[in-house]
Length: 406
Image 1 (cartoon, helix red, strand yellow):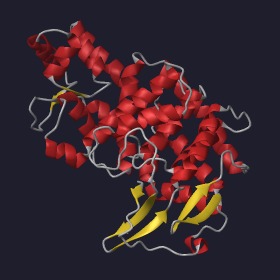
Image 2 (image 1 turned 90 degrees about the vertical axis):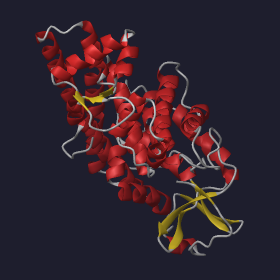
Image 3 (image 1 turned 135 degrees about the horizontal axis):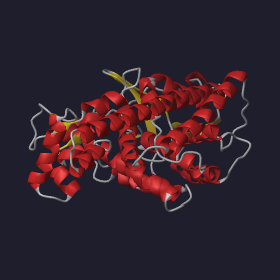
Image 4 (image 1 turned 60 degrees about the vertical axis):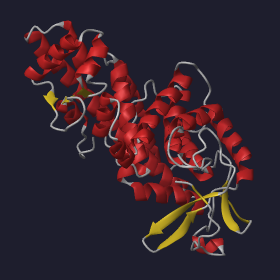
């Protein structure tokens, strides 16, 4: 997370950037106004691919086609799209220190609110905003055919940060002050990375926008995504929210290149599980121009998460077909089918939610939920909220990967 420099606080650093590990930097280490800063080289860099990287690229490229193929076979794909957007939002936000789970987010969405103390503890508004930012940005590019430019990045940031507590958020604005990334222990803080000074941002961001616009036929698309994500993180153009917008950039560039037909990718779970390595690989590009290790890590993340997403969608398809058979065998009415389908958008439901979905009376909505409970599709939650909440736990089980991530 970017932090404003506080001149009254002492931070451990080194006067000589060589001692900070910048031996073969991918950019320029400068000393300005008493602060060392790093200005990355413009994109694209010159990189080469060894046999391992080529193998990963080949595997990853094949998985893109498989993911698009299975996504195109899903009935009502918008239901699964929303669910996967929420999974990405939860995982990406968790990297930044939020505590909310996918179950928390779905509960919050079904109820419409939490107790203020719970909402603040989980930093729920940030996660909800991020889902909206993903949805908005994807629609700008996919539906409205807007190029992936700085206005899209600023718009997504505005949605992400609006209404979030704190005086340094500046929604939808690039920073005008120096920021830095710090490491923390109970008794000390130290500088990990200092991004470019504000007067370098315009040139760097314009280059990033140009890179996203140009096709770069000589660079594989997934390599372009890895480069763009690194560059955004190195620039760190916002006061807060850089990590989440930077990871969203991966998804948006795949959309811009017409590579991904639906936002079903869920990269942040891998980054969260391997968070120390994720940060270290990004930093090593800056320190020692180690693009090779970062590209391999990025491609492994893509292969792992795409494989798991494909398997998860197949499990969800099988589960939906099983639910349909159960409802047909029970001769349930259309309302029960409609509520059942909505569970693949949010596995949590209340009677008021079902009432709005069906546009029918409270009693009719309640009967539909009771049908799903009686047939074992829904279970009433034991958690105490202002409304009774019912959960399709089978959907969460289908979402869980072999590694146990939901």
